[in-house]
Each structure stands twice: as structure tokens, then as C-alpha cells.
Amino acid sequence: MGEILKLSDVSKTFTMHLQGGVRLPVVSGVTFSVHTGQCVVLAGPSGTGKSSILKMIFGSYRCDEGRICLNHAGRATDIASSGPRDILALRRSAVGYVSQFLRAVPRVPAIDIVAGPLLADGMAETAARAQAGEILARLNLPERLWRLPPATFSGGEQQRVNIARGFLPERPLLLLDEPTASLDAVNRAVVVDLIRRKKQSGTGIVAIVHDDDVRDAIADVIVDITTFAKAA
Amino acid sequence: MSAPEQPLLIAEGLSKWYGRQLGCRDVSFELYEGEVLAIVGESGSGKSTLLQLLSAQLESSAGRVLYRMRDGMTRDLALLGEAERRFLFRTDWGYVHQDAAQGLRMAVSAGANVGERLMAVGQRHYGNIRGAAAQWLQRVEIDSGRIDDTPRTFSGGMRQRLQIARNLVTSPRLVFMDEPTGGLDVSVQARLLDLLSRLVQELRLAAIVVTHDLGVARLLSHRMMVMKDGRVIETGLTDQVLDDPREAYTQLLVSSILPA
Image (cartoon, rainbow over all chains, first blue to last red; front, side, top):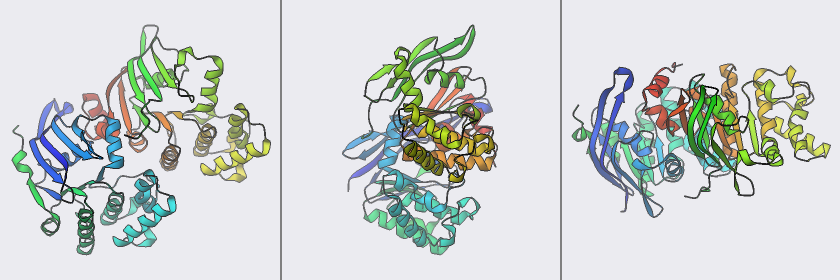
């Protein structure tokens, strides 16, 4: 098992200029690694910085200190010190992310939102749509919804669109921010199965899950984020 | 990484004063093919001045803009000959104005508006030009039955889509957009954004989009520059700047978005 991701002494503090420059320490000294085919679950109560860590790995939050080293295509890249272009390139080839909430262009049908990353990878439209349909069907999203934009969908339906979009492209590292939070038991089981398959194919996963059953089913390593709490 | 490593456009220390009034100051960045850069800021922040400098419509007081021409040579825009400038304006660049009436010829037909750019690059065959125009109208979702109507008879959203077709028909590599969705109803805006984001991706266009709408910037752009008082105060990946804004002013902008 090769090491795909290594965080070393990662720190993050928010400075809130609109609140008189209050400094909001989030985490410090975050250190853990992820191997291929392994799922690392970040544990700890809300507000301890789990999502912030995922976002720093994805590059949508800046990292103040430390290194976030990604091994991909035979080289190591420190995401923490990478510029926008390198981070974008990594997202296209190496890092997938399922956010807590779906964010998409308002008028786009669900199936196109899901197929989007595949098209960006250069897949032909019919093939991408076919794969998008397959995964939406697995996630039990009724076919009559596929051609509709998800803005009017329920929370659970939106999340399944989001999961489908994030799981479809092949990326060696996958970041999951509460993928099962608003799903029923049947669809939770589907997601657990999707995660297992990703692991079998060698994908390294960093996940945040609050559901104990899901966590027990997918976690190889549990990292307690409260140990990285930053003193104010 | 596999992306082409030479920037398409380089801005170096660009400044503009209008007399003693500062337009923008010391702006530097690089733009690569296929990359969409959003320039955000309030009115008067210097973003429109910057766009005009970058697109060679305004002469800078200091600094320069370099552009990689189709032959691979990177050239200083200020030193281009008239023929090369025309080639950029008519073919290799697009410019989408906020007010479509500025970017269109309102008295000639939709088809001619699109076809005209092709004629400017030497195409003469009427059938081919009309065919290309019809195809582009379809791509921007304008009913081909409207090809002989003038844009005067079009709604605001249709005019904007026609303007986009007119710009893209020559396969430009770089498109400048000045508040492309400004002044449109939100439903029309959504449709236009969807169209723009698809075209940008399909055609691997580089684009520089000036907008005060952070939602537009989020949906369209990869990278972002925040301007205030003529200076760039923050730059980064679009989601980085919007989700983790560092400067006080950017935090103010981001926290001022009205949730729908």
C-alpha cells in the first residue's frame, strides 16, 4: 500500500476582519497519512475543524502552516504551497471532493451535473450520460428527475446528485464531507457499497461521517481531530 | 502537468492614471489557455479600466501586456502593427459588452451580425457564411427562424446570446467579458451562465470576466482577482477567495451576498 497523502503539522486560523480582527484558531499540528485503498475517517464533534481539513486538502481553504503532500503520477506535490494552476490540475487528475451541499448552475439538469466532470475529463457525451444514468439509478434517484435541475429536489435527492457527481470520475484521492447525512438507510447502504468499491480499486479516501454504522463500515483508520484543537 | 506551459496573456505592472485620478495600479498576472479569470470589485474599483488596458482599447500609463499570437510568438500589444491588432480584434479575441447594443449592429439582421465577423476574416461564400451563422444561432439557443430579424426585435437575453455567437464564430482563443449578465432578469441570467460555462469548457476558451456579481464569478471562473481603489488586493483560486477570503474588503464583499 503506497502512501497517497500525508499531512504534516498543518495549521489553520481564520482572521475575522469584520469582527475587529478576531482570530479564530481552527486546528494546529494536524498530522496523518492516507494509503491507497484506505479510508481515513476524521472524527470529532462539530466545529472542531474536520471540514476545514478536507477543504485544505482540496485547496479551497488556504493552509497557514505545514505540508499537505500528495503523491500522484510519480511525484509528490505540496498542496499547501501550490499555486492555483497546480491545484486545478490536481483536481482534474487526482483529487475528488463530495461537498456537504450541491452547488451547480441553476438551469442544468441533474444528469448533466453528474456527467459534467466526465465531460471535462474528455469523455464523449453519450458515454458520460450513460455512466451518469447508471450511478443515479444505483442511488435510486427516480429517472423522471434526471432531466430536471436539482434546485427543487429534496435534500436527500440533491445529495445523491452530489455523490454521483463526485464518485463517477476516477481520482486516486476522494474527499467526502458527510456524504450520508440526509440519506435513508437504503441509500446509506448504497453509498457504503460505493465507498467499498472505491477502496477496492485503490482509491484513498478521507471522510467525515457522523453516522456510527457508516463509520464502522468504511473506516480503516480513525483520526481524532480534537487532539489537533488549537488553543485560542 | 500536461497543460501548455506558455501563458497566453501576461500583464506586467499595468497602471493607468486619468490625469491625477488613478484608474488602476501595478497589476500583474498571467493567463493560460482554457483558464477563466474573474476580476471582481465595486464600481470605481478599476476593474473596467483594467479590462480596457488588457484588451488594448486603452493605453497604459505604465506597464505592458504581452500576448502569445497564434504563431507562438509572445508580443507586446503596444508594439503590434495595425494588421496584427486587427487580427486580434476581429478574430483571435472576443469582447462581450454588458450592453449588447454596444457589441452588435442593431440595424442589421442576426445572421449578418454573426456572419460579419467571418467576412472580416476573408470568408466570401454567402452560403457558408449563412450556414455558420445559423449553426451559431442554434448553439446559443436562438430559433433559426429569427436569422433575418434585427436584434432590435430581440429580448435582452437573446441579444446577449447573439453577441456571444458573434464573438465566438471566429474561434477566438481569448474572450473579454464586461458584466456579461448585468442588467438581465435572474432567470435569463441563469440560462446565459449555463450557456457561457458550457461554451468556455467545450471550446477551451480563455476568458477574463469583469463582474461585481460573486455568484457569476463562482460559476464561471477558475481564478479570481479582487480589486479595490485601483489595486488588486487579493488573488487566488475562485473557491479559495470566496470560501476563505483573507483581506478585510474581500470578507466584506463575501459576507454581503444576499442568500436567495
